[in-house]
Length: 121
Image (cartoon, rainbow, N blue to C red; front, side, top):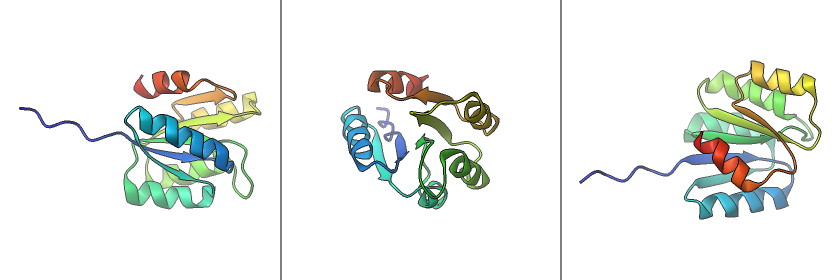
């Protein structure tokens, strides 16, 4: 009998506590193991130490924006899948994100079903 696969580990990074709580609740209901961070400066160390499969990263955060956070994440893990989401999309940040190998760039608001489909793609 095959062993069940371990859950996909997801790190959600957003300075908005309500969004973190919503994403955690929704993703855990779908079987993902989720951790949230509101301080983007903690994300690279968490990725390095905890081996996430996916990082869902807000673009606009105080202190260190999503592109800067993604740059630091890439220095510790070049393979982790990263989805950027933002309420303020621009061609410039989309291009920067893709150059840093983000797997997707979503405009807020987005449906959680859309995120789940993209995670499984």
